[in-house]
Amino acid sequence: MENSPINSEQNQEQTHPKWSNTSWEFLSKVRQKSPLIQCITNYVSMDLAANTLLAAGASPAMLHSIDEIPDFTPQIDALYINVGTLSSTVLPAMKSAAELAVSIGKPWVFDPVAAGASSFRLRACLDLLSLKPTVVRGNGSEIIALSRASFGATKGADSKHESMDALDAAKSLAQATGAVVAVTGAVDIITDGKQVIGAHNGIQMLQKITATGCSVTALIAAFVAIDPTHAFEATAAALSVFGIAGELGMLSAKGPASLRANLIDSLYGLDEASIHQYSKISPLA
Image (cartoon, rainbow, N blue to C red; front, side):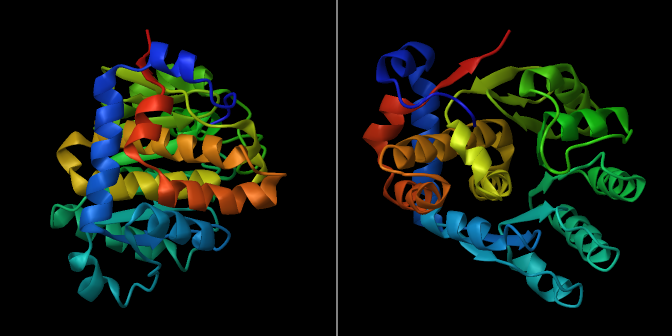
């Protein structure tokens, strides 16, 4: 999510048409079906995550109470769990929702924010990981911490590693868990433990807006809700679409605040021609 502004010639060289077609198909179906996405996410990201889902055409439900999960979670199309503002009071609700989603065959997507920051946080993340998420999306440091099951010095929710530094860890984690693993950074890496692709869309200034990583994970949940059997393709498509929205939003932004608004507007108005023109998804060696 940290690449250069739009360069259409480069985009056309890097992207196979099947990927831009896939990205447009997923976005179109989200708009048509408006999947219901339950978000148990952090307090910082709720607003932007909900508005990202709405702009894409999905229906967000920011429902955290464990008392509501037995009645509500069976109605959802996908579950999104984010541990950014983790506490011992909300963790049982996260586990309960994930267990229920898996038991009824609904996909769930996991964002292990700052997984290596403390032993409590790491243990919680590993416990959630054992509940078989469909997709895990994190930065390089988070994915490495999960893969090694270890914690240490961190920069909080920021990554001390580039996404490519975590390639082997991502593949190992995918193989161990059966989840699709996405590592966001200068190149967004997506792997199922065998195949690996990179989504090259995005701009560096997205790092200056809190909760963009959380929001793209929510978007992944909406795309996966459309077709859980193709979670690998859905994840790549969501990352590319979000990155393109950022690139287009940056064209008229004056800084992080206006980019935040433009990002939502660009995602809402994104059309097929723009996805075909600007999508950058390619295999990684």
